[in-house]
Length: 96
Image (cartoon, rainbow, N blue to C red; front, side, top):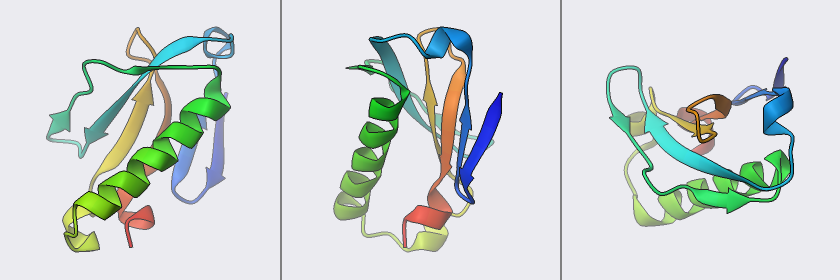
């Protein structure tokens, strides 16, 4: 099942992604290029993964003062160990 939380976050719920304790990977993608998170982090559940994603976006905003247009086609995709996209956040919408 896919849920649109707001206009810039799309979350896909799968039974296997609801269990407590999982490793999530935070990849930056734009359709052509992909910056892959090779380490990932352990999260308690999908809500914790979303909180960590928002924290990562805030850190990116503080570290990279590029114009929002530089992020126009980029998204932060959060995946599980198998590469299944749990949710995606459109960076052009949140990096203003």
